[in-house]
Image 1 (cartoon, rainbow, N blue to C red):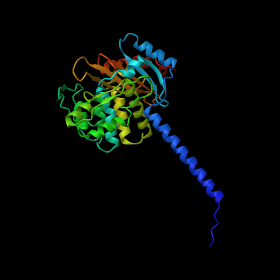
Image 2: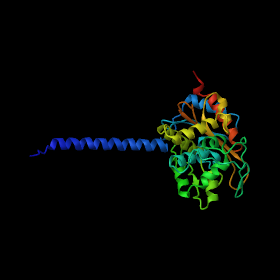
Image 3: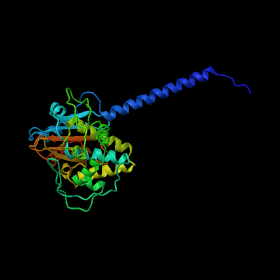
Image 4: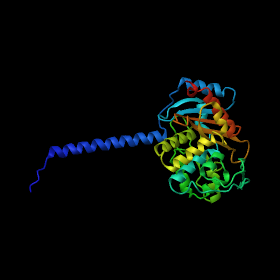
Length: 319
């Protein structure tokens, strides 16, 4: 049997292959840009900016911003320069990032339960829990109530490189491109289990900006949407939803818009007054924005209250 060699068909297949390769490369590039938030400089939305301005006008020193999830555009901000340059320990806001990584990588089971010791000291840090007394908690409950015993056990079980990877995968340790002259996150690779626990709890060995934290939560929401049918995404989303509904971040629900999110309270590594964070995405049924708040003095619940005021004035409350 004699086979004919059709150069026209060969060239056509080569062109088709090249086009498909270019499309795949473009899609990969767009995906990387979406996850890392490199979207250029702010695109301010008048309605959202008004909401942020009204909600923060009586709160001195507050840093706040709203990011559009799909585009990564900055819709509104308060003290943007400081939001990109102020480095602070992130406290419990790291917990959902680490939990998602541990569940998705198979390192940790959502059904594993850890008993809360209530009072806990690691190094020079007093890390007591103030949530309601409960039986040993699973992943959803621990995230809802921000149990330090649970997350100290989880963080301490991760290799230092795995802990760093959990943060890198969400872009937390990278520039966001949302403001000029950003500060770079500071992360010290843990050398001991105790250092890994303190880093995982966000109280030592790591400092980030509000821009970086907001972008990390945007990346997390995108990742969970892509993998919405996987248990790791369902567990973390449920924990964040419960946290901002009736858990430790419940103040965020007072704005009349359902939001999933997390508070964080921490102080400087050398001691001193505490600062507070809240980061979340709304509305929970179809997240469109990330709302992030940082208070240089205060607690996570205070920051969640500011987020609630932003939502109360926001376009999400409009019919």
